[in-house]
Amino acid sequence: MGRAHPCCSEEKKVRKGLWSPEEDERLASHIARFGVSCWSSIPELAGLQRCGKSCRLRWMNYLRPDLKRGRFSQHEEDLIIALHEALGNSWSQIAARLPGRSDNEIKNFWNARLRKKLRQKEASSTAGSKEPAASHRRRGGGEGAGTHPAAVFNPLLPANADRPCPAGYVAGAAAGRSSYDNDMWATGSAAATGGAVLAAADVGRNAAAAESVTPSPTSTASACTDAQAGCDDEFLKAMVDDASILFGDFYLNSNHDGSISFWEGHVFS
DNA sequence: AAGATCAGCAACCGCCTGACC
DNA sequence: TGGTCAGGCGGTTGCTGATCT
Image (cartoon, rainbow, N blue to C red; front, side):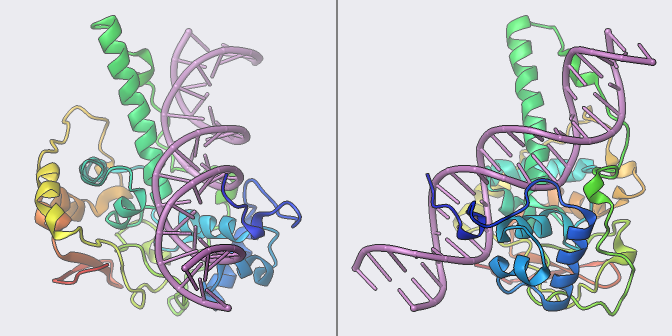
C-alpha cells in the first residue's frame, strides 16, 4: 500500500467522479492565467474541491489545448503498434511521440485493441475457424467524447490568438492540423518535448521494430479519410515509414500555421 | 420497443521516483 | 542520510451511449 497523498486524504472534502463544465472552466482559466506551478495548490487557488492529482489528470488528458480528439487514424494506429513494440507499456513515452494524443488516450486505445486481439486469438485457437462475433460491431462514427457531459466545456473557446500559453504548460508534441486548430492557443512559446529520443543503443533495435510493422490492409477503415483526422497523417506516415524519424535525433515543434518543424540533433533527457 | 451486450472513455488507485528539508 | 512530499506513470474500474437481438 502506498502512502495516501495528503491532497487526496479523506479528511479533505474532495469531489470525485466526472468533471462538470464549471470545474473545467475554473481549472482551464486558472492555468491559462497563472500556469502550473504546484498542482497541489491549484485546487485551492482555482476554487475547486478536487485533489491536485485529479486536476493534473484532467488537464493532461482533457483540457490541454494541444490535444486533438477523435478516432485514431490508421497511421497513428501503426505508429502506436511500432512504438509499443519498441517501448512496451511506456504510454507516456509513446504519447510524447504522437502529436496531440495523451498517454491515457493511447493506453485506452491499446487496451481496447489488445483485448480484442487476445479474444480473437483465444477464439481462433480454441474454436478453429470460428470468428468472434463481437468484432464486427461498429459504433457510429462519433467524435470521441462528443456527447459526454464532461465534454461540454471547450477550454479552447473563444478563440483568442493572444491568449497566453500557460507558463507551466509544455506542449507534449507538435500540434497537428486538427479541427481544433482554429481555436488552438498560441503554441509557439511552448517548448515541445515530444519526440524525446531513445538511448543510442536502443535505436537499432527500435528501428528494426518499427520497420517490422506492416500496416494491415484489412484493418478497420482508416480515419485518414476523416475530415478531421485528415491529417497529421502525412507526418505520421513518414514516422512509420522512416524509422530514422521515429527514433532518431529529432523532435517536433509546432508552428502557428500548423506545420511541423524538425529539429535535428537535439537530444533530450 | 426494450433489454442485453459491447466499445470507448474518463477518472481513480496504488506505486515509484526525485526533490527538498 | 533518511524521511517526507509532490509529481508522474501504468493499471484498472466503472459509467455512458451505441448497437444488436
